[in-house]
Image (cartoon, rainbow, N blue to C red; front, side):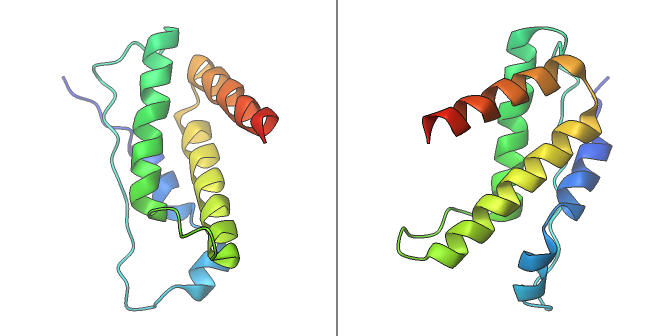
Length: 113
């Protein structure tokens, strides 16, 4: 039986930061994404990494592509959208192995900067 991460889809839908929403075109449709995970063993590190990758892919659909390097304000909004959306999606999943995998990945990204 295929399960869908409905709560993460809702989190992805509602996770667009207010600062970005204020700049958004009111005629632009809202985006939500369902992330399937019924085929994954979320208690395994490999399953958790795959889930994080699926959430990242869904988040890209929500936040869009990264802007050009010279568009500093848009880059900051994009990073905020991506970070907030991922954090809320992982939190809504509420699975300790996935949360740990995401925390390790987010920590590694911060250390690389």
